[in-house]
Image 1 (tube, protein in one colour):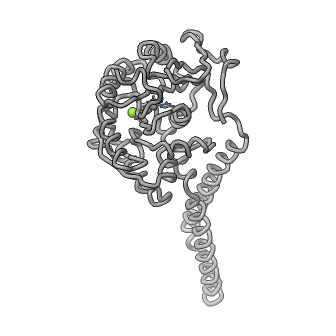
Image 2: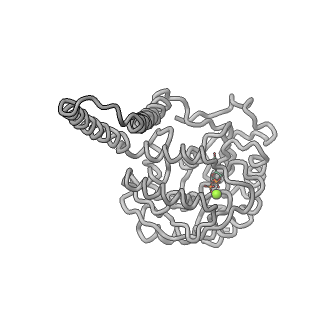
Length: 343
Ligand code: UDP
Ligand code: MG
């Protein structure tokens, strides 16, 4: 095997895992042969995002099975897919870093395409899902959000939801210097990339288990993306406010003139209601929008650790790191004294 004696890998694969026990065996069975076939020195970094099922035990077993190329970072709680990826990034050593979902929706065999594209000199390879295999609602909501987000943030991603992507070492190093609490990794990478490109990849149905994103979580994620990369929504509300103030000023003048010329009139009460409620809606929406920004600022300034690592399972040859060999059964919050907090 090319990878076992290698001092430092050329390819790092980062995989966030949250309650994926049903699909992990299938992932292992496809991932390692696909990577072995590449002829690269590679490493796989699993990040267990506080799974409450057997995922962490399965990752620990897999790490024992392929200790030469496998490392696992275990969080003490659920901090979200993007925090898991960021934690993985901090431990990567490869020149090329690929992120992959654990649910096999993006086939591991496609990593070869990404690596080939990176070798052409790009420092960021985004992906577009060909024949996306998700629900009708997800596909259409995602397309609408993609279009809106592109106008608001100027981050060019044809398909923001596809997480099978490749990042160059410099891009990953720059991301590692960021300390954003709410972020969207592909957009962050795009802002730092000098030569980004996109390719098409296959997309499959989830091999097992269910999507870990509820509608509420998806909305939050999209707010992270928009608020994290643009102030345009706030500016839009300011301009809307100016426009409405001018329009209502003009209406007021018109009504005054009307009253002077034709006397008092009492019609139009319901129109007034409609206009008032519409404006109330706009007002509440803009307060909410402001709240989305302020809430994120609050989370950021509190400066709490973005995630807490409970244990790192690492026996790779190049490892300088102190290991915390916690047995899978003991991986609870009680083990927090062993934790490593990351800002
Ligand atoms: N994931 C995670 N933490 C979370 C939610 C998801 O690490 O809080 C992982 C999950 O295990 C999977 C990837 O992120 O590997 C993508 O999640 P999922 O497939 O549920 O998202 P979808 O494909 O439905 O967008
Ligand atoms: Mg998925």
